[in-house]
Every structure is written in structure tokens, then in C-alpha cells.
Length: 77
Image (cartoon, rainbow, N blue to C red; front, side, top):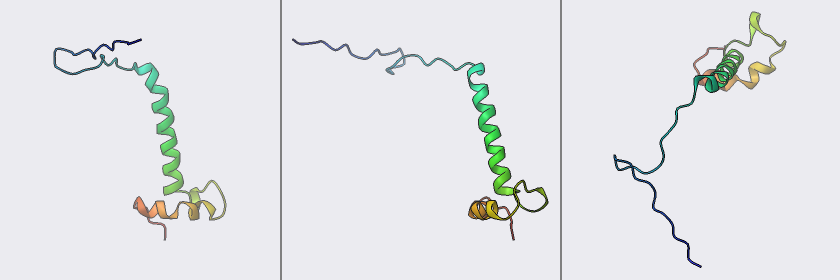
């Protein structure tokens, strides 16, 4: 039993495929806030987690993010 396959739709500009629908801001905004907050927390731990502003005592966090700190241009010693 043979099945026929229809060719893809071609628009007036010569491209194939369907129209792209834009995402509503209401769907994107929570994810943007979450990712922005996560990036700020990571930036804090890489750039400022030592000394007087440290959240955790000791040097464990500093040692874990030491290379990333230098990679991003933060001085640490």
C-alpha cells in the first residue's frame, strides 16, 4: 500500500515551514526573573564571597570558585 507525501508548504518569499508565533511576555517574564536572580547569586559567589561580606565562614567557597574568579577578572589575592 503506497502512501503519498505532500510537499512542504512554500510561502510567497520562497521559504518552507509555518509562521512563527511570538511568545507572550507573560510566559517569558517569570523565566527571565528566575535566570536573572540565579545569575546575580552566582556572580556574588564568584566575585564577592570572601572577607566581610561572606555568607559562609571559612575559605571553601573561595577555593571552589577561585579559577572562575580569575577568569572573570576579579582580584582575590
